[in-house]
Length: 518
Image (cartoon, rainbow, N blue to C red; front, top):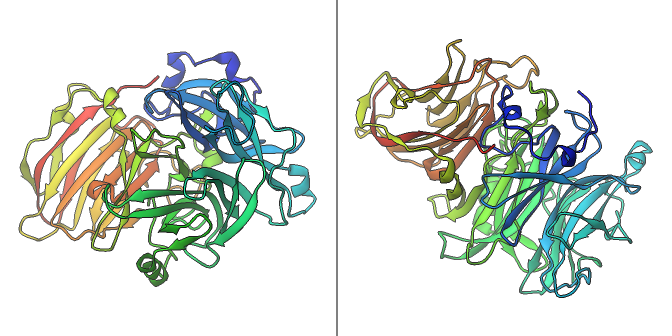
């Protein structure tokens, strides 16, 4: 499928266009054609901006542009024209955006701060020629709330010093040093630079050589502070995507905890000890253990009155992203998630929860009655109408201390296709091996996906957001998250709880339909 039609000419698609097979109903997806990494996420004057890697000429990866959408509530999205096109310096790879409130760059006018995008220019001719310096960092600016963009005339602002993978800049203002800080991927580690004006950059430090997951190239870093338990000590969180090398194969995003002094990121000693102790993966700390949450970063310039650190990732995996069985478009984003650091017996850990704004599209909930289950309990039958878009909460316990062999929530359809997720042998799992179309790529349904349960408790809280072709499974209050896509030949509309090798007490919960955002 090939077309160079600009989405700006289409505006928002007609509602029926979003009834295509496998089209997400409450996750952001492009109007058409290819999408991957979220880029340039910034909040300004009541709008959340989402830019993204986009190729308008095909449903497979190609010369990268920055697609663009905005939202007033992180739920409903308005498609906007392509923001950045390839030029003589190359394709437009991933990056970030900030509001230059003090006009340090001098790119604003009449007292209005510019919105500045910082991105990687990728020179395909330099890559073909075998050079190492074919990626470098450039900027563009907008004076009309992100609707039109002007590339800086003296790009690149950070030339390549001879590093093959030199990309994905994330920029933030560091108050203590009164400087802009840029962190970006540099092969198998990250580098940090700073600047007083977003134009002239100076090297600060490196981090990551030989540390954490090293199974593939490092990409899409993010660095930000969070307070433990909301009001405790401040720690800095470094997000780092890696491909391949994820805990269940292919793409995934790890994280590190430590301190940043304006120059150097240093891992917390206790955290560093735990990372070094994990010899299996190199890093036991993953933002998401599912196969389909990659390249996620957080929004810049969220108002202090809000105070949240809000994250979104690309809901796919490079093992099969180009061949999943959709026709008019490829890929979707995760829902927006709030990130927190919480105290655990293993020290502070990163927790994720869907943003509260999603309640706007949740239909009235039906309570799940308390009862004991030893085999199977229907859940979707509590709803009057079948739905492929659901919000599920379950509170389960095994008061006698005897954990069942397996606790599974099963999504299914009339064709006996099924997707399973839950807890088995003290590991969380998702299983799409029988969930419909799987033959398009051998690794897509090669095995069950697992995640370690670090919480030792005789109870389990489950939250799940189920869309037409995806699930986001939040376990133990979001301490473990698993995101997977699937492609049933008929929508999953039936949902039940299954228990093997024991009993569970259902202590409550709720199920609700989710409305379409389109």
